Amino acid sequence: MLHACCGPCSITPVLRLQDQGLAPTLYFYNPNIHPLTEYLRRREGLLAVGERLNVPVILPDQQAPPPGEQNAADPAIWLQAMAALGPDMNDMARRCPLCYELRLARAARAARELGFTRFSSTLLYSKYQNHQAILDAGARHAGRGLAFLGQDFRPGWDEGIRLSKEWEIYRQPYCGCVLSEHDRYRKKISLKA
Ligand code: SF4
Image 1: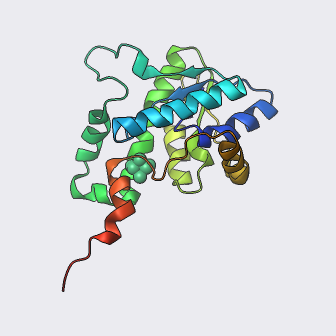
Image 2 (image 1 turned 135 degrees about the horizontal axis):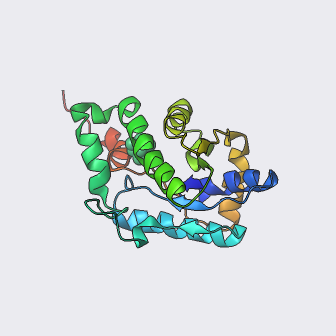
């Protein structure tokens, strides 16, 4: 099972795993993505990649959540986790590892439930993510019959960009959460001396 953050970041990891004779299944679990319109655009992009590469895509937001849990697309899942950080949520070094943890924990749980023996994440493709923190989160959730494949997909960075453009897959302009969206325009707020 390959946890997928979006379409463009999924292309190279799927191709590399297929090169190795593996048959990945994509799993879209990203309650960090804000707003819902953006979530839906990335989800649509992932479905297009799945179709192109003949790879199944699991959408947990289409399944009834376990008792006491929110729908997989509900941003309250991410917001509740971040609330524990207080003002430190503005620090990417604090919030991003927690964001990976949240997503990979759910992916690992689903992988076990569905009988997969290995899992990984397309987050390992991005040059902009904290690679070591993703590896650490994956390793924490491995075990009990599930291995984490901590493959570095970043050498295929250019390939993923090229193919996503050729295939006209939606390419997002910010990482995903409301704070990363805010960071895009933060410089426009200049305090007057
Ligand atoms: S910047 Fe990206 S990885 Fe970090 S918390 Fe926001 S969505 Fe998650």
